[in-house]
Structures are given as C-alpha cells and as structure tokens.
Amino acid sequence: MQRKRALYLASKGFNTTAIDISQSGIDKLIAVAEENKLKIDAFVCDLRSYNYPVFFDLIISSGVLHLVSRDEWKRALNQMKSATNINGYHSIGIFTKTEPEPEDQRGLMVGLAEEGELFDCYQDWEILDKKTFAFEHQHPDGPKHRHSGNRILARKR
Image (cartoon, rainbow, N blue to C red):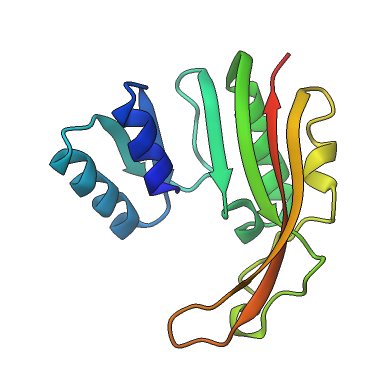
C-alpha cells in the first residue's frame, strides 16, 4: 500500500480505497487520515482474494506483486484490469529478475517478473509511460542490496 498516495488522492477529493495485508499498515493509514479529516476506505485484505465491489478510475500497485507467485500476480492484474473503467488508469510497479533477489530477502520475492513482462500485460491498453529501473536499498540493520523493476502508466481503451 502506498500510504502517501492514498492520502494525497483523498486530500484532493477523490473517493479512495486502500487495501494492505498488514493490519499495522492499515492502522497507520486510518490514523493519519483521521488526523487530517480525510475519508479513505481502508481495510486489511490479501490482493489475491480482493473482490472488486466497484469499477475504479485509477488503480495503483507498487512494491506488492512480486511478493506473490507469478500466476497469482497475473491473475490479480487481470482482476484489476477488469475492475477498471474505460479511460481509467493503472500505475503499476513490480520488481524484476534483472537484479537477483537479495540474500537478506531470500524466498520473499517469489513472483519476480521477467524484464518487460509487465509491459506485455498491457498491450491491449494505451501505454502512456513505461520505465525500467534499478536502485540500491537498505533495510534497518540489513545489508545494502539492489532491486530492479518495471513501472507502467497505462489507460484502458
């Protein structure tokens, strides 16, 4: 869940829904939203079992899909695409296999994408922007490591 993005969209008056598998993540989002008098429909849910109750104009997913198997993230992505209004947008990011899974996170990233695989999933949409990226990262008390990924902004035709 991208807390800052959800808070920003809600602050601009958008109906905002946020899901996260982490109760503490949802609790933090709700607390900040309440402090700022923002309305966000936020709840704990596994993206693999989320049933889209409405159609959305924008779906954002970043830093999540590579944490489930490739079959599961492809299925979830297809559900997201089906639940998006015509002329709606997706902003999606996923880590790729270009950089190996960091040793300190071994076994966590079970759904790393092949380079460009995310872009292929959107051939039936208008691709507004696509990027390949790599960056260095360090978790508290962990070693520095690198991640690679793909990010796309696409509009449903």
